Length: 260
Image (cartoon, rainbow, N blue to C red; front, side):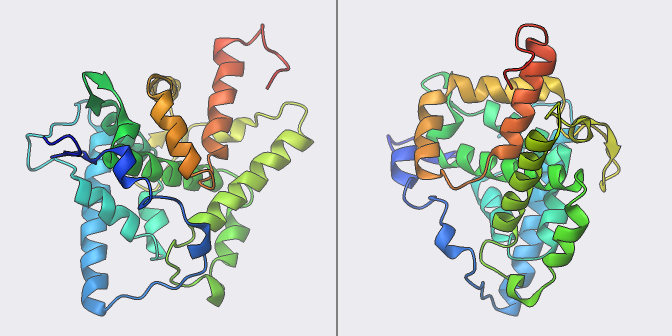
């Protein structure tokens, strides 16, 4: 490995910072691909999502030496390149994808310590995780049907960033309504077991996975803060909502009854 590029995790944060800034100016930019490229993007993105789901469902940890199950940096890129297509969120919206991303983030180390946000691989894992989490959370709300109908309007067709920015805004509004209108702002509908499209039945995210993700973010908080500096427009409201709910309900249920 050179000082700047890891053979599996890619470039260091200082070198990919500009490339991966979340660009709100691109929200309504149209994506343009040839039919051949479209077919390749579908195939590559779908394969990568399938591997993430399989990792999330498995009890095993990521194995970079296994070519059949390895999830490469290019595969993560292919998932984000799938975003302009309407089918992308449906494919990605699975708790198993979320769990797979958490496993990958935990495997990334720098100087012997967990540091997923040091590398572009970890950034892509987290961005995919956040998109999947937002879509799953929106599906659990009473606003999903109206949002999905709105996204069929012509102005939302084949955008560079797909429907991700609109989805992030919609789930932020849902959670804002919850915290404003409910005496207990942590609605149980977001934390109930349900049947998902991929034949998985369970929670959006388990308490253990939520704790693990919080630990990963805390242990790499310096680089996570740098990541947020460049990507403050990347909505994290659903993920933060779930973390605060866990703190309030499981960690300090009696000590902090009204703080969150």
